[in-house]
Amino acid sequence: MNSRLSGPVAWLLALIAAATMIFILAPLVVTMVMSIGTSAFAAFPPRGFTLAWYAKVLADPEFQTSLVFSTTLALGATAGALFLGVPAAFALVRHEFPGRGAAAAALLSPLIFPVLITGVALLQMFALLNSNNTPFNMLIAHVLVTMPYVVRTVTASLILADVTLEDAARTLGAGRWRVFRRITVPQIAPGLAAGALFAFMVSFDNFPISLWLADAQHNPIPILIFQRVASVFDPSIAALSTLMIVFAMAIVVALERVMGLRQAVAI
Amino acid sequence: MAAAQIDTASASAYRSRAERRREVLERLIPVALLLPSLLFLAVFFALPALGLVSYSFLTQTPEGIVGLPVTLQHYQHFFGTPLYSRVLLTTLRISLATTAAAALLAYPVALVMSRSPAAIRRVITMIVIAPLIVSVVVRTYGWQLILGNGPTGILNWLLIATGIAKTPVRLLYTEGAVVVGSLHVFFPMMVLPLASALGKIDPRLEDAARTLGAGAWRVFRRITLPLSLPGLAVGCGLVFSLTAGSFVTPAILGGTGAQMLGMLVDQQILVVYDWPFGATVATVLVAIVLLVNIVSNWVLRRREPEPAR
Image 1 (tube, rainbow over the protein chains, first blue to last red):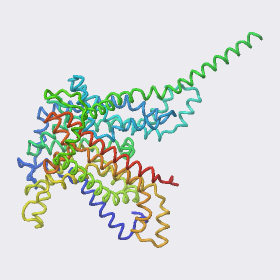
Image 2 (image 1 turned 90 degrees about the vertical axis):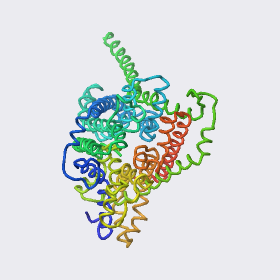
Image 3 (image 1 turned 120 degrees about the horizontal axis):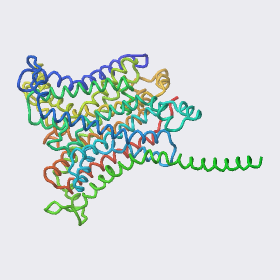
């Protein structure tokens, strides 16, 4: 702690901050601890040590189907969000044009709108259009919720990139596309990677959109967990949740390495 | 010689035409870059949202077909039925309590975060942000384990083991449980804008106040708090609207003990199949969220901080 926070007040602040950190970590740690107990109910304190619940989850065909579907969906959504979001971010940061503020607001508006309601609205539209292709409907919906995150992260990294390098390349006669490919992309590559990772996780974790559009054959993991929280009481949900936590932490580390977590989240 | 002159003349005419073409191109590029994403948003976001709102003014036949006549009866039904008014009030109460709790806890965390050495700052930032990447369903399940009503719920087990309580306390399926869960889920949305705002405050202002004899509380109240107001406004707007629109946390931690608007939408559409009424509840929810965002934007505009030097 530096000189700007000192004395009893600083200790009080530090104490509250430390307690808050415990509050933040508690449900994650608890879930991990519960996943290794031997008793047939997720009860505290856990007794014994076993990895049997993990074996049970991994061998569960429903989980396997959900994992494949969630992963495919998240990859598709990420690709779609990058395809739509990167050019948009580029236009917002590198071009002056009337209505730029409005365009930026429109692109980020799905973040303000309640996601749950976005989901119902899409369900209504797909029902009206008789669009019964669940994977297609879900892909559209997931691109919609992940795109604003890509726009935000890539915008942040474009603002940080050095424009003078692009100007220099153009002065030296490089065409627009060549400048973009050889100068801009290498500079914002961390931002693109972070945006892609973030978009993947937003889709992989999403519940409130999938709630409306999923069906029994296309059941993403968060929906599977939600259904089981209400019906299964053994620690296999804790094991499944722990797998999700560990995967998320791997992504957190990757984001921190690639771009810095704070910049990647861009709040 | 004459031929050469004609050549340069035509060349310059050519150049100016090329320049004009380039200018038009220059103006078309951002349009071309933005068109796919804005078109996508118009078709799959704006259009369905308007469609949903319009359903709330229409009538559904017993066969489930929605159409004319235009009516306000769903809104009358919503605001005139005590059960639904209670859900609305519960939603507002839980959102307000979550926002207040988040603001109270976020100030110490954001202050420590923005005024600490880099290493501590980094650890706190990681702990604050990391849960954002973990699915809400997973985090809420963790809270269900902690708040369990039986003696094997972790908090109850602790209360009994330490002798504070003799029998298990009812924690789960209460509004308090939903507030705790929502606070956990949306806390980063309060801390991060607040930490940004705090980081922009000129440290000399606080130092000057302290040198002039102001106590810690007074410095906070007269300098830190007013200057961090933009961050607080953003944080409060985000936490309130996200909590008001949440589904997972009240569904798992609140159940019938704390029903919120999101659960009502789900129930009306997926269980009762009453599209117009579900759309009405959804529209009320959207109106609340938009109102909160307008207010927080207004505070932000009014209190635009001077650029940090």
